[in-house]
Length: 116
Image (cartoon, rainbow, N blue to C red; front, side):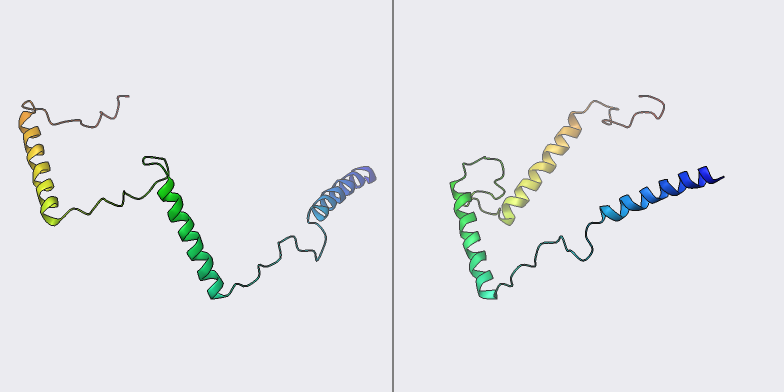
């Protein structure tokens, strides 16, 4: 009876010792020290500097390069008349495509549940 209890006691001691040592030293913080507070004026100056550097980097980036998210500066937003004309053109193209479909063809449908 003493041998199983002794074995279980040693195993439990090892389990608790591993978990205790894994936690590190008590009272020692591993987090970095807090950053120094920055005044609003310093933050605004740093932000303006970063924005200027970013704008310059975008200007120097070749057109079509990956990462360029904005359109060219010369591109302008379409007017209401242009949008209406484009919408009418899309509707006319859609109606023409419907007329050209063979009779009885509806388009791509879902596959039957049993087929793969």
